[in-house]
Amino acid sequence: AEMEKPLSEDFDPFLQIIVGGTYQKEFVVAKNKKTLRISGEKGIVLKTDVIQELSSGEVGEFSKSFEVEFRASYADIKTESLHIELWDWNYWQLNVFESYTSIPLKEIV
Image (cartoon, rainbow, N blue to C red):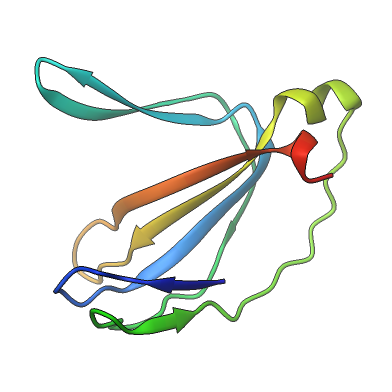
């Protein structure tokens, strides 16, 4: 996977990949404040390596690959998803959640 950071600051990205489970994230706006609501159980959780100090306009590539065996019923495949989250790694502070996407398993199996 490749990614490009359009902002002006350095970025230390990594991906968290979640296969299956009932895990969901959604942004909720209330009183002009955007918050992230998380619910459900995570399936199989995988993380890529961190691309150190990716500069604005620079393209980085995650080189780690995974072998995963996921066993599920047809009902599970119809309701569960593959989630890909983009995080900014920080050495001294908490990692910063940047973005995510979800793909229903029924669309990729």
